[in-house]
Image (cartoon, rainbow, N blue to C red; front, side, top):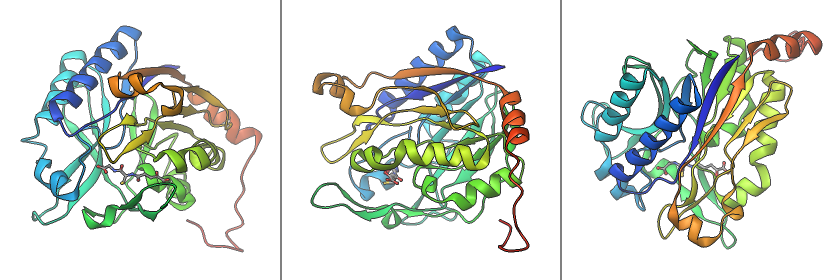
Length: 286
Ligand SMILES: O=C(O)CNC(=O)[C@H](CS)NC(=O)CCC(=O)C(=O)O
């Protein structure tokens, strides 16, 4: 059993504010005895326009947010999984939505670039968003990497709606699938828990979903409900939904931390008790 810490924050356009929230969570994770910390999508910043997002985006060697977290990881010997933005190579009008793994030495040793972009129109009851206006999508499912918690497979937020990459990660050896997110409130109510539990049940893996929660700016609010799901599909732990907060709390943007014991025996037991023998003679293997 290894204790994982999962952070819930409310990022704004101030990278220093966001770094301070994440540093507080690093210290709480260390105090709790956690061996890794998982932070949401876009922890570095959430901007109010594509132009602002582009203007805030920096290479990891220059980003004070990323460098601050690398230092926190090194000083506390705590690996950190965190969603950020990075420039394209060569730099362009678009940026990348990525997930990095900072090891306990403070080095970035893995990186995943979000595959599916969130282009939706929920008006009049919800937002319209066109992530593809400002984000370049990735082009590969990355190999799960070994960690203190087992093999970690990386996906981000809207990727959650697609079973294929999760199944692919399972076949590539994942024990844990992560979905750092910034879900909208209406789609969070409808789909968040159900999709996360479905992905855990289908892959018979742990699912760790660190979520943004609260009001980021005048245009955007995120759903919250950071969750960890067991390979059986049961909820192992969760944090507040934005609708559970009063508006003062929503605006106070207090970071919160969930800790859960990750047990790789649960992966083995689930896969042994309910073996999923695929009929790849009938449909293609993913
Ligand atoms: O904008 C940033 O900087 C960070 N990126 C996000 O917040 C992304 C794209 S707008 N959000 C989602 O994918 C929400 C998915 C969702 O809510 C659903 O699938 O229902």
